[in-house]
Structure formats: structure tokens, C-alpha cells
Length: 212
Ligand SMILES: C[S@@+](CC[C@H](N)C(=O)[O-])C[C@H]1O[C@@H](n2cnc3c(N)ncnc32)[C@H](O)[C@@H]1O
Image 1 (spheres, helix red, strand yellow):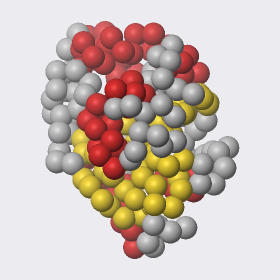
Image 2 (image 1 turned 45 degrees about the vertical axis):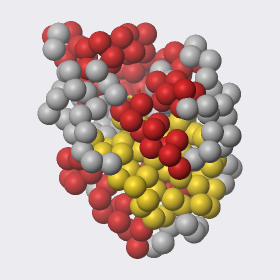
Image 3 (image 1 turned 90 degrees about the vertical axis):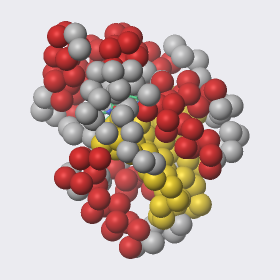
Image 4 (image 1 turned 90 degrees about the horizontal axis):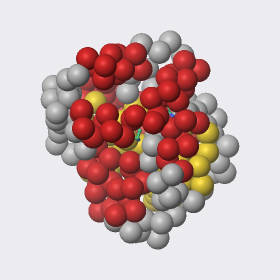
């Protein structure tokens, strides 16, 4: 991997708070698509979107949480989805997402804090590459659950090591025990960054909201 890009990823992960993370993504926004596709071979947006499309009708109202530059929106548009909202911490990333012309609405908000969407706003939520170190934590699921309709879907990718070590496993299982959601599908481990970081493994999780 080229040194500049390797440094860029470490620089993102070394952010000490959301303000710094947001500033760094703002700065990366213009180069993000080229870096992710050419240097890393980022395939998670397409992989996760295929899972969502298996369970959710394309007329559905879908939130892309941590939409970044809109790669998930583009992948969902290929499946025929038109009613998409993008939400992200970084204004710079959202500016790039707006240029993709696939989202009806774009909102700057922070996962892990209260979201200003009404309860039961969305048929489905998708979040790719966001439930990770120094980004959104397991508590983000509380608000995602609130804004998703009963019997709606929450689909996300997560690094297999982060799932085990950073409180996600415990949180996901606690929400199952409380009968707030149920797992309907989990992918095999896959390499989301096969060119740049082949050692990193993700899974796609698909949950259905069952009660609130
Ligand atoms: C690795 S990028 C993934 C972007 C896009 N989903 C994709 O698959 O290309 C992570 C994105 O999550 C956003 N992000 C990180 N922490 C967040 C938080 N707590 N709330 C909302 N967005 C966040 C970043 O601004 C960035 O756009």
C-alpha cells in the first residue's frame, strides 16, 4: 500500500474525539472514493447492499447511517432503491454524497447521540464501515432501533475483532434477549479491503426489529 494512504487511515483511527474525526473525514472527503476503490478495493458497500436488497423492498424508506461519500447509496440505487436518506458526522463527506444524486435528504448527525428523526421513521437502516474503532459504538443501536419501524431491518458491517472485543457482541445479544430485535442473517467472514488490508475481516449482520 502506498505510504500516503496508509498514513491517512492511521490518521483517521488516531482521532481523539468526534470533532477531530469529523475534521479529518472533511479533509479526506475529496480523495476518499479514489483511495478506497483503487488502493484498498473497498467492497463492503456492495456486499451489505445486496443483503439489504434480499430482505427489503426497493420502495422502502432507508437511512444510510454514516453514509460517507455515498457509496452505499450508489449500490442501493443499482438495486432500484430511490427513497434514501444519508446521515453522517462529516459535512465534507455529505457534500460528496450529495453529488452522487441518489439521496433525497442528507443530514449531519452523530451516531451515539440522540438523532433528530421521529420514532419509526424508516423501513430499514444500513450502516457500512461505521461500527468500528473510534467511530460509532454499540450504544448507537438504541437510537437506530427507535427510528426503525417494527418489523423493519437494521443491516450493518462490523469487523470480526471489533465485534468480539469492543462491546458489540454483548450489546447485540442483550437486545436479542430483550426481544427488541432478532438476527435474520449473518454473512460469512469476508475481506472488505482485499487489496489494501487483506487481513481485515468483516461480517454483515441483518436484524429485524420485533418489539419496542
Ligand atoms: C469508513 S467511512 C464509511 C462510509 C460509507 N458508509 C462507505 O461504506 O464508504 C466511515 C464514515 O462514518 C462516519 N462516522 C464516523 N463516526 C460517526 C458517528 N459517530 N456518527 C455518524 N457518522 C460517523 C464518518 O464521517 C465516515 O463518513
